[in-house]
Image (cartoon, rainbow, N blue to C red):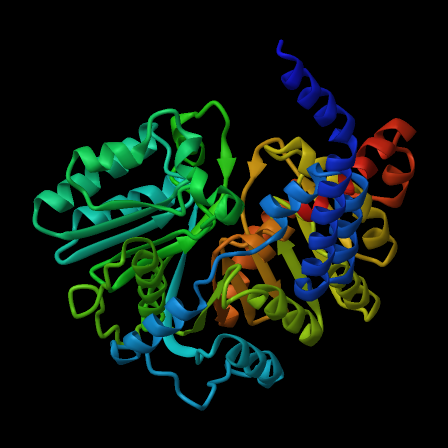
Length: 485
C-alpha cells in the first residue's frame, strides 16, 4: 500500500469515532426538532426522541422509516371530493335525521358530521354476510351480473381458490364490456406467492397496486397501507366489512388456517360514498377520475338504516375513527360491545373504556384467544388487568381465529368496516367504516356477538394474577413496541 494511502487510511480510522459521533448528534438533533414540531402525542414524541439518542444512527433511521408521515393526499382528496359533490347522493344536508326513539344520538351525530363533513343518509339496507361462505358467493354473483361497472378495493387478494374465483369473475365482467377497476394494496398483494396483480393484468383487467414500496419512496410510504375492503357493482350494490379475499375465510372449503369474519352487502344512498371512496383512492394511485352514471347511480332509499361513511388514514382524514369511537363511548348509556381481532388502543381509548365501565355501562370486549400474530397477542395482555379491574368483561374466543370487526353502542348505534382497535389501523392504515343507526340491525349484530360470547372464555382477575412471571415479562417487553406494531 502506498505510504500516502496508508496515511489517509490511518487518519480516517482515527477520525471515524468523531465522525460517527457527529452523525449521531446531527441525526438525533434533527429527529428531536422534527418530533417536537410535528408529533401530537407527547408519549410518541418522547419515545422517538429517546430512541434517536439511545440507539446511535439506527434510532434516527428507524424514525425516518416509521416515524414520519410524508404522504400528502389531503389536497388531492379535497379536490376530488369537491369534483364529486355533483354525483348522485353526494350532497350533504344540514339536518341530521335521528334513529327512531334515539334522540340521545344527537351528540355523536353532530360530532361525526363535523369530523367527516358528511351527513347521515337515510334509507339504506345492510345485510350481514357471515364468513366467506355467505360473502363470497354473494360478491361473485354480483360481479357476474354486472351490467356497467365493477370497482374492487382490498388489502389482501390471495392467489388461492377464493382469489382465483374472483379473478375469473372479474375477467368475465371485463370481457363482457363491463368497466372494471381493481385496486390492491401493494404489500397485501404480496401475502400470496403468485401476484394477483400480475394475473389480472395478463387477463387485461385494469388493476393497480396502492403505494408500492419502491426504493425511491421506501422511507416515505412503506408503513402506510390501504386496509379498506370495498366492492361496488353498477354503482348500486356495495360490499364492505372486514373480509379480505382469501380461502381462509371460506370455511366450507376446509382451509388450512380457517378464519371467521363478517362482511356486509349494502344498498341505498350510502353506496355512493363507498364508490366515492374507491374513486379517490383510484385517482390518487392512477390519475384516472371515475365520474358519471357508469360509476354512480341515483340509489333511492330502500331500507331503514341511517348510515354514513367514515374514512380514516394518515392524510387529511387522520384520527377520524379514533374521534368517532371516543364520541360513541361518551354517549353510551347501557352497553358497549367491541369485537376485534387486534386490541392495542392508546392510553386515551383505554382510559375512556375504563371510565365507561365505571359509569355503570356494560362493556364487553371480544377477542381471539390466539390470533395469527403472536407478537400482538403478547403485546395486548398487559392492558387486560386494568380493564378487568374497572369492570370491563374480556371474552377470549377460539379455536378458530376471529377476524370480525364490530362496535355496538346501546340499542341503535353500530360501526362496521375494516378498522381494528390498534395503532396501525387508527394511525397508519387507510380504513373505511360505516356508522349505522337502526335498532333492528344492532339487534341482529348483537346476536352475532352474543354467539361468540357464549362460546368464549371469560378472562378473570385470577387468570391474570396466575400468569408465570416469565410470561408477564415477555408480554411487557413486547408491549413496549405496541405503538409500532
